[in-house]
Image 1 (tube, rainbow, N blue to C red):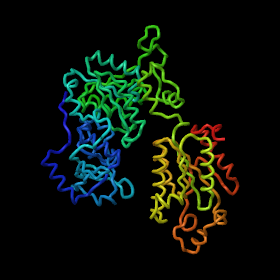
Image 2: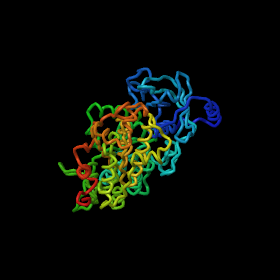
Image 3: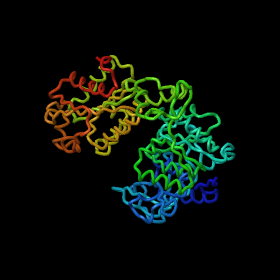
Image 4: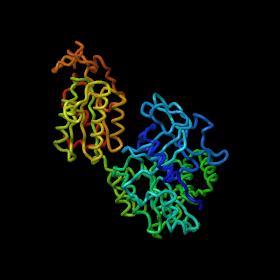
Length: 521
């Protein structure tokens, strides 16, 4: 087993780096960037010692595992030079977490344009400390920590089960039998997406993995986006750096890959000295009351889609897929849509009727809906949440993003958020949708009442003031309203009365499965 190493600077060098960081360029990492830095710093990404340029940017900066074997998906760090200032070769860039803690210093080797003020930065990293995690700390092991565990150090071989469905019972049984044949200790890898520290579903996934593992087995938790964790070649590199001898994966994952990708996986595994074993999930035999090799033409397990369908429907998982204690935790990863939180965002010009429809919609929901309902109306929000903001483009953008943040938190808690700002900019609306959909449903309602009708209704006299030049950057007059192309519902209140408009929104929510219409009428 190779000795583990990392990129952590010693005490003396660390003090030098901290002293030099006082006046240096600085970048605050987002969750995904911090997770990548954590894996780099711990040595999980060796032989890489820093961030790389995009693969197509510059061949001389490509990362290699061995002669002719490219590093799979080398990590790229994008920063905004409007924040960091100009970055040139030799610049020391301080990498900090969201609380301002200095985690590492990157010495810039090269940059590549990434659009606007953003650039991709390549360079070696010297780490001062790893990101702090207060959850599941016993499972967040570095390569050095895993290899130091007595059961790992004493094992002749170490086999890691790393699959999309790590708790599937038929796959775990196949992994245990394969490990027994190799006289290998079993390590189960479970991944959680960065930035999901407060996501109950992510924690339930870890609890399910704990419930599935036997006492003699080891669990390893890695912060990886699902798309990155799906790369089998990358799994091979990480597993090798953790001192693993055998990577066990679901055979169906390999079969689904194009032939060139399967060759890439084998090439990477050979380069890092790792054996890859494709596991066929076993089949439960009722007569023998045990798992056996699956009969030809019979499915040995459930697909992720089938598992999600059962969980969303509130139906029990088969015992041969997951033991009762595991199934109970998996059930907590998915809320049936009729119990999940969601957000409805009404957008439209001033005077379009969006607040009127939103209030009527909330009243209809409250008649029968068991979930809490919160109305975030544009004028009310500006009095409290966004007090002090003006009506410049930046301030309006900030106002809508604040509404989106609160709506996402309400949705995450299983409640219903109803928002009615003007929200004139497409990019901001899409950002709010992305925030909310991490936790539940999102429905965008475009109240498309024509501007001439809105202006006729102008009870506050805003349009008149805008046309007289007394209100600068007024949406629809001196500032654009970007018509949404992704609206789930479109309502024109000059042609549709309030009750019918509400009914249209309820119909859409019923189609999506977030409400049962019979309960709201």
